[in-house]
Image 1 (tube, rainbow, N blue to C red):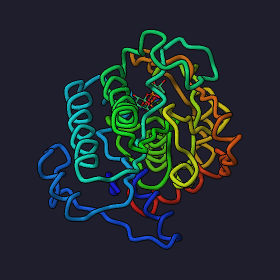
Image 2 (cartoon, rainbow, N blue to C red):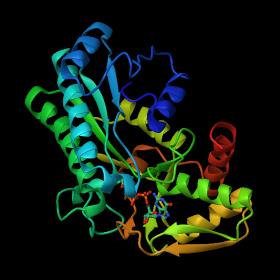
Image 3 (cartoon, rainbow, N blue to C red):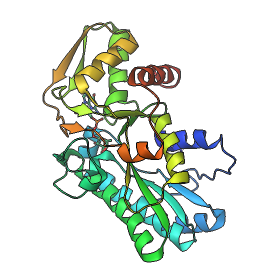
Image 4 (cartoon, protein in one colour):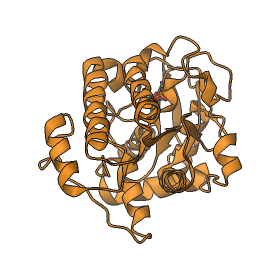
Amino acid sequence: MAGHRGMVGAAIVRRLKNIDCEILTASRAELDLTRQKDVEIWVGKSKPDAIFMAAARVGGILANSSYPVDFLMENMQIETSVFSAAHACGVNRMMFLGSSCIYPRLTAQPMKEDSLLTGPLEPTNQWYAIAKIAGVMMAQAYRRQFGRDYISCMPTNLYGPGDTFNLQDSHVLSALIVKAHQAKEANTNSFEVWGTGGAQREFLYVNDMAEACVFLMEHYSADEPINVGYGEDIAIRDVAQAVAKAVGFSGAITNDLSRPDGMPRKLMDSSKINSLGWRASTGLEDGIAKTYAWYLEHEA
Ligand code: GFB
């Protein structure tokens, strides 16, 4: 398991504990995934049968545009290390986790897998998108040249326990939880949403994502990446309302128009994974309530 301390990696580990398997992880102090030789030594010693490749430098719209070098280079370095070590050590099965931001900014919605590389990327996250596209192509290249059974899945925007909760680096859902909670605690009349509030996003609860990853590891083997989405999207202003309700904040929600909206809409076409038999099971209201409960227990 590469990335077991991240939100998705931790959720996959929780899910794997229900299966008869040995879960291999290395702490960051033990292994720096950007160091190719060290990764090769670790994989050679640990001999995994399969790898979930969920390790990545991630962040929300502001972090993505503030740290282009980190998002491009760190992610490419981690991918290069893990793919080449897996192949060198004879690991024949790997799942790479991409991101919905790999699809073109103005592609047809819902976004199908075959829209990859058909148009320009969203500028706020192009560095991360290029690194993730490289990961998808690494999986395809090892399959084509060496017959390795490496696959890629494309998660939509994720949220849930283990997310990053800080106003600078977070994705929108966890940031809104912090803002609504702080506004309630401080008894202020409002909290602020970045952008117009009109951008649309699709949100998938991280435990559903983990379920999909295990499902795909067991059932999917193909060159083409496969989308993993919830099936519906929602405007940011409506997510903010839903978060305010879950947190118990009844003041106003205002807009900071100096902040970007990013991609106008991002909804996955998940018909491929749905036809294989997986479907998201956690509704947005339920997922927000569970995430807020986790935040109160661990972060607030
Ligand atoms: O989740 P988010 O940061 O990333 O922002 P993206 C989603 C939308 O929420 C944008 C708006 O339209 C933001 O302007 N938003 C409103 C906020 N208030 C806030 C706030 O307080 N914090 C944040 N962060 N957003 C990311 C990419 O894009 O999607 C990543 O940057 C990755 O690379 C991820 O691909 C899945 O959905 O715009």
